[in-house]
Length: 121
Image (spheres, one colour):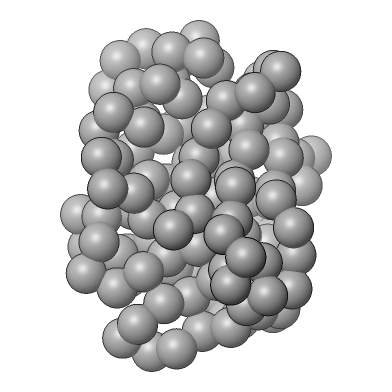
């Protein structure tokens, strides 16, 4: 399953091999100073917006890749029935939002908030 990790001043979405194939993309990197908000979405579908642009979306199972919408493009690595860490990014970042399913979403949110210098949620 995809993981959000902080590395060398960047927030990195690490994908397992099958997610890289589904997304048609390697890992995603954004600067930590582009992170504006981090939150947990208990209901996975709420983290998705727009229409699939590149990648694979299997309704009710998973959605991995990019999605286009009115604000820009999001990157998603979302699995159904799992909470999602939603990261809102600043204008000019490679994506408007990152949405990644996580086994321990509160811990991931806390780590990202701390690394980005955001107040505890």
